[in-house]
Image 1 (cartoon, rainbow, N blue to C red):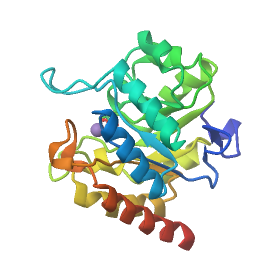
Image 2: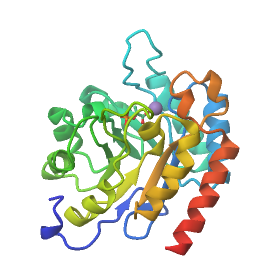
Image 3: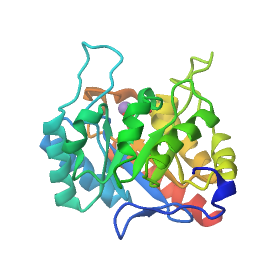
Length: 263
Ligand code: PEP
Ligand code: MN
């Protein structure tokens, strides 16, 4: 049950014995949209770790709008993520697109369900049979209640380790890629005991808006952030426009730790 009525205390999702998220444990997840090469993922992993990240993200199976765009390195990308984990000790977060791929994700620490699969109920039920943390992103045009019902699909199948993610929703506004619904953070905390992370990268689509929205997310009570960081954003194979360079990420990390101390 995702509902706070049946579970008054905040859930703490344990990713590893050292890395937890929820109830005062802040999760700072950073890394490239897509894993592109061994050098790229190791370099980004080391730089985000140095800047205070607690987990490494990186897409291997990519849900691209156009079938002609880069689709990810797939199984090879997962292998490179595991190498970056070995090099840095950072747990890894990566997106699954199909239940058929579950065996490939055996050594992944957190499995991400992307916005486009939030209501892929058969996938959610299969992920519910694992006991690995699931980062469940809100769909492009889904309500908060629908997000919570999708969390219930995972939890009612037996897996209580669900982290919710607000990543912006589609509105009539076009100045940003999506509209960040920050009020989802206090609403989700009121309705549910699950940890809530915010993705200011996909929410805005614009690197220079990531810092202000990350700061606002922390001020609103988010339990974590997931931020795209790339060694060379203009040449990124996906989502370069919203990706921060490592030094920009370090600046965001400093800013949010000041806000966390102040609140
Ligand atoms: C991503 O995290 O790279 C991604 C595709 O996110 P979303 O599912 O929120 O669009
Ligand atoms: Mn992306």
